[in-house]
Image (cartoon, rainbow, N blue to C red; front, side, top):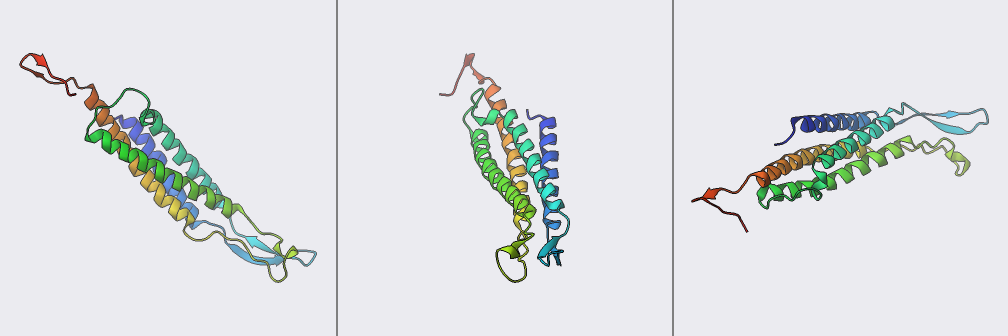
Length: 184
């Protein structure tokens, strides 16, 4: 049977990661204005850098949820064998899907956090004209949030299907006419 504690812990970690990814999208850096320093060099002044912290926190929470599920299911490949059937097939599909969406979510959150933290202070030392203020495109953290949601969905389903398959493997075969019949 599936553990309610593991399901709840992973759900809370994934929901927090999702909320932080959405918050990072809302709070991403924008160049507030161009200022001039004492040497008459123009530079970009940015607003709050909260999105970088939100993105990294979402990345760590999503990673923690993935680690908990993979430890609980023994990464699907270690431990006692599961009985063949639909629950093992569903669990295998969700296992592959959760890793696929997890990698994409982590890459989006990491790339968004790194790019959001990048500031071009003195880009006019290399080129002429007003500075080009580097800003993160809209949607990078939103894509990370969407894939975080899909990761949460597939990890929860993987764990539930894995638990059903493990329970089905533990049930002894039925006794028919006094003889234990086993599947081959």
